[in-house]
Amino acid sequence: MIRDRVTFWCSLAALFAGAAGADAAAGEALPPSPREAAGVLQRFVATHCLECHDAATATADLQLDRVAWDDPAVDPLTVAAQGAETWEGVLRRLRTRQMPPPEMPRPAAEAYDEAIAALTWLLDRTAAQNPHPGRTETFRRLTRIEYERAIRDLLALEIDAAAWLPADASSHGFDNVTVGNLSPTLMTRYISAAQKISRLAVGRPRRAPAGDTFRIPADRTQEQHVDGLPLGTRGGTLIPYQFPRDGRYDVRIRLTRDRNEEVEGLHGPHEIDVLLDRRPIERFTVRPPRGKGHQTVDAHLQTRFEVSAGRHHLGVTFPRRSRSLLETKRQPYEAHFNMHRHPRLTPAVF
Image (tube, rainbow, N blue to C red; front, side):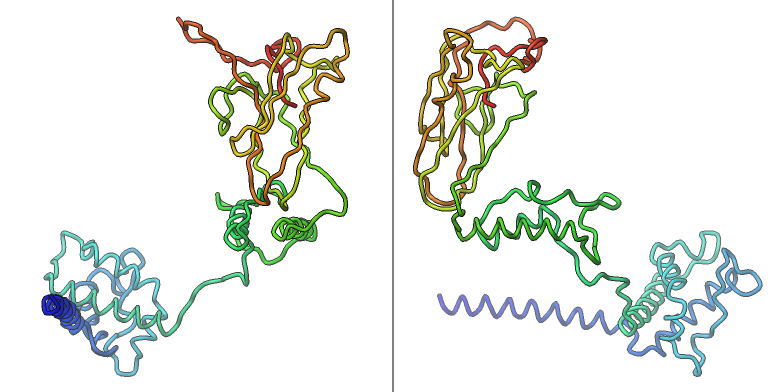
């Protein structure tokens, strides 16, 4: 077994050695010095190019007889560096066999390959000796998405950077453009976000009990299922929330009201579920008031529960009532959010 493995690895090494030898053999075809490369290129240009691209003709404003590549007083790398853009164009034409044109005598395939190898070698050596990376900025700030990912990777903390940082400016469809400085306003936003993130990361308690309010858009119809909540429910909301530390938390729910401060769609008793990571925490029942006292209809929708620190999903929703209806045609979109035009059929979470 061991001998078979040794044989396998030796065969593999021989295979790579053969490949390296093939590369070396291929590399020997390249000119070993700038002077020899210039000689190959000079012979090709004099034979196949100067009939159309000399000083007298200069077809397409291209003149290739200004410098003699084989002149001992001329440094081939200097010539390549001074006319790099021109010779890059020549190289592209040779690689695609666009030049010489079809009506002119065509070089042999070997002549093409030698000239391309020589010119490529000269341009590569020139680029290596005179690197030109272009203009680069000293630093680039993270975009909001990159900022979120960096916080997640460094602190294992999921945040919503869009709630704390302004939208990234875009240029030509890209929002990760380089910036040389930050405005004082944007720097203040970053510092404020960093302070909030640091408190969440270490679970630093607040000086006094406080809360966060989440409002659902007033024009959102809550007659259908909400993504992320259990099936068999309708309406409500799902809130990803970063609990700063282990403890007991209060949740209070307020229902949507119309302009008369009356709970919309409350035509009978309705149940409301409070869920934590899809697990039921509490179930409430709301009923229409006997009179006009809608102020206290949802006063009892408050619960307290224990939760561990970290990111959890808090859900508030209504158990969906069965609607065993036979649909014979496509129904219009149910938009129940307006008191007069599209009154709500059932209560909604505010």
